Image 1: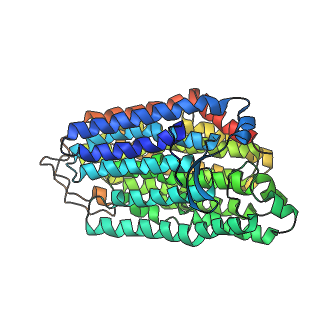
Image 2: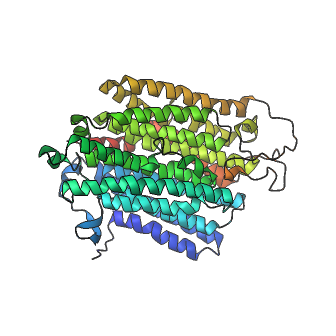
Image 3: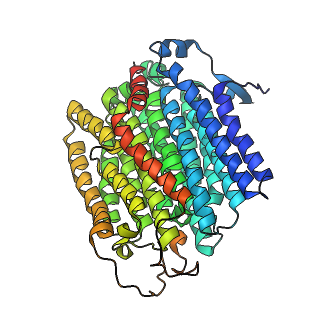
Length: 525
């Protein structure tokens, strides 16, 4: 039995699917194909943004309890694909839909500037990935979340393997293997366990689904703890060590895909799912009462510091950014693991803040590659004088990752520090301070090199191989000296300028994100 509707959450799911079809049909005409991409992305943002006022309404949670979920299909008796909008999903959908527009503009300059093959397939898979994100963001139960979580993995696999080289295929298999194994062996097992212990209740609700079975003794604290472990390590997209290797491996993909992985969709899907499971499946109060989730604080803290230390020694720019992402994701996890209302707000805000800062950094890395064909940090001496806009944007993104004002990263880190003080968590405070210093140690030298170190004498350098397939081409493969360059093509510069400006604007005008984050915590019992 299938129920069709044109309600906003379903329209948000249908639009990128329709866009993928139209992009495929327009593949012979690049200008039309890219126009369809931009129009679809714009229409999606319009639909998603239109839902925000209702979510921010003071009586939202009262109406949420009364409103039925939008049921799409009954897959098994009593097991439905269903959508229901809540504040955390709204925040995730707004991030993905807004950044899809800028990523599409960027992709036009990057894909054409680097003469990438299979561009139509790239845009189609990108649209399908965004559709998966919409389904994930608005999932009304665990089954729906799992379906779209897996769909996101499958639709991004061709993007990771885009170049088709042996290295790209190998890295894409690592990406697919780790994410599928963790989700099927652990996440699915946790969902099945939830179904069994709750008597078939997989519906998301503030405070969690285990309240009744914990109260009557049907579910014990050790079993609850085991289920929690299955969920946390089953959500491989959150890159909690040691299941993080897929993320650096995926850097073989073109830069717009890296931006998709790190800022728009994949890793955000991971930490979004972690936070959603903690809030709507287990419930922070239950985790505190039964002493189940404290181990996550220490694992996330270790991930933050270890990944930061690894990043410090990476000369390849995208690999340094990749390990930075592994570290930054665990800021969300460690905030969520503090299990206080303020820490839940901090976790939600860092999902948004990291998105704008990290996409800016990857856009800048791709801009450098497109214009100068440089891939290593050691090659960037003086590049800020030739590419001032790109490196100014990179500087803003770096400051946001460090957590300095006036950038988005300061907002979420400020809330995290307040939550640390509120919950009396000295370990988390030490982790935040040390990681902030490490962030500065691996970002600021790049900025210093770009603006304050003299550019080397012009000469042809031998090709340097790279662990990153995106950067593995010869420096002169476009037929000119890598030193003879200015800024990248204008779509790239426009896109990275917009994300850099948005990173600063977020510092001054973060009311929407804070409102949604506060609405999320206000629903907690």
